[in-house]
Length: 405
Image (cartoon, rainbow, N blue to C red; front, side, top):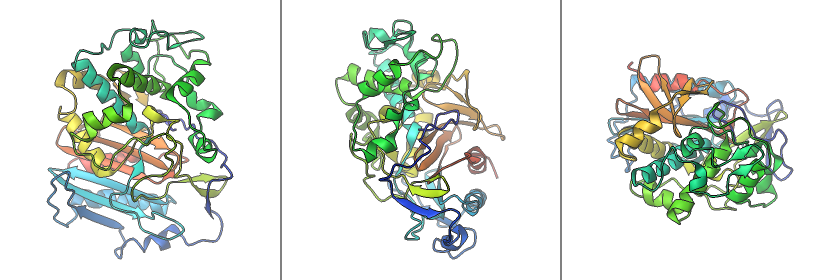
């Protein structure tokens, strides 16, 4: 998993059972040559799509904003990224822009609305569920997590009686990172057919010393959202997947979004292959064990679904206005790569044109996503299907997509 501040925790060695692809330095068709499969025009593919969930009325004519975003995507694939897709929603109309390939072996073009693993974007969904529970009176942000999970969050320098729910959601708890441990490697777990439980991952984290005293610092840590997921299940008596479906996916028509079951290593629907460059060789890393990241990063979705979710969230339809204000209260330093400050499960930043953007990045083996919405009725999701060595300027693409032309 890639953390919010850009630190990558995926292993640098490919497991022997992972499928290997063409070497970056070996003889193979260039990305530019293969991208010709995608479009006849030299600028890549710009596709206006009518998404039934968004009631879009597609005109089929790219806007000036779409053209600027398309040029950015094409620069990424010319630089060596296998595939990239941007989904731009404005006034109920969704444009899907693609560049590069869905599969290096077959030369298939990037799909317009394929499912992808969205990594830490999962955290926003989990936070939204907990904020609904706050609105319902089942949870208080400033009460200790031990009130709801007695004796669960305990370890070396760790005391759930001193850690509040707010600190969990804002990564100010000081909890150690489980994904730093080899057992927290979702690729290795998939190859070994190994399933872990949330309690397993929490115990792994709690076997380490606290990073800092609660409330004294900010450190983005996936363990926080394992605790958040356990909180959802404890408070509702239902699985996180069931609560996600009941509270968010079904009410808002997110038909292509789901939380994979433990052991479900394949992506259910049509999807681009996720790649990772390991030792100069591009490896198919599409299969992971979802029980490892779970509430911290296992969600599968599409650009259209994510745009709809963040648009509904920004409009105050997912959580009540009082709880949305709490989510957006971002006083902590956050992602040094995107310039986003961190609230409760969301990042917030001001784009160069003055527009406020609320969203979340998500890194998982093979997929790197940035998604969110502004306060002007627009939403954008960008995914590249290759774990980046250096994250691209996705915030620059966001500015092109959201700022006035």
